Length: 118
Image (cartoon, rainbow, N blue to C red; front, side):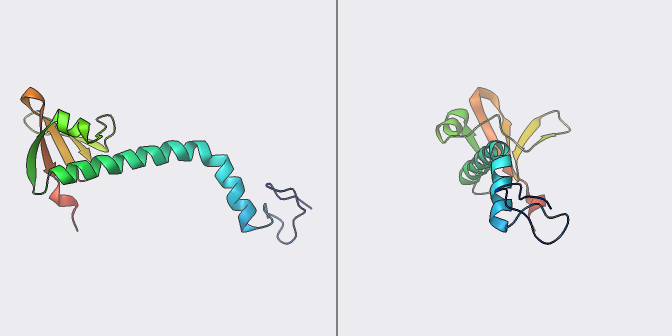
């Protein structure tokens, strides 16, 4: 007979059972993954924030803004979801469906990728 991996109580039932209850299973897995979950949660929160900032600054298909405006709103230039080079050699950095392109004098072109809309 095996014991619960979380609380140590003897297990009844199936041979391959590892936990005595859903609460013990959840507690065990939450404790086991808490460090990695925090990193992932923080990155996902910042990615969502980056997208909201781009969406706010780009109400239409295209718009321009400055690096200062993005930074003031809390945009993190280190977190993106993809990079798309153009045929002309420009590099768009995307955060989900919004992309930005560095222009001269710390200006940025923001675009919305309509292909991802359903």
